Length: 192
Image (cartoon, rainbow, N blue to C red; front, side, top):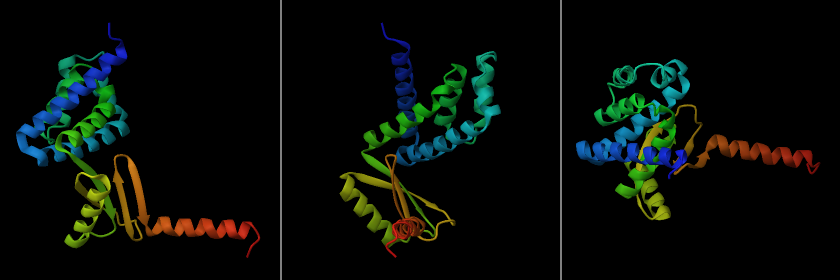
């Protein structure tokens, strides 16, 4: 007989799969990527808002009431995502949200044969730089990539790439930190 851990893993895979298939059917790859972005934002919001997390997970509340709260809160999201979140709330599975999100991203990358690369720069990428980054990452990973671009004015310059949970920091700030550390080590050693 499967234990609770196996049952939870089955739920995680099922929710993620239903969400992926629904989004893919409704709008193709663009809809799936939109759902990924929205789901990531929702995970952050729920994690930082204890009142919302409590309302969506309150086992003393009526399940239909929890579903209604989810539908009302996430009504502006992709319909497939809104409905999956409502079912999760109704069934008391909101505690699985982080795992469902991770499974969703893993399944979408596998099913669509793409790697999603978060690219953060201080200014918008131009077409040439976008092409250079795409070609380089595709060659390194051996798969098609989708760039998700973000602008962060707090960067001094350079670029931050995140793919599959791994971060490549080629920002000016990281280079300055490395130089500062090297200079400090040199001065601490009495070499200067």
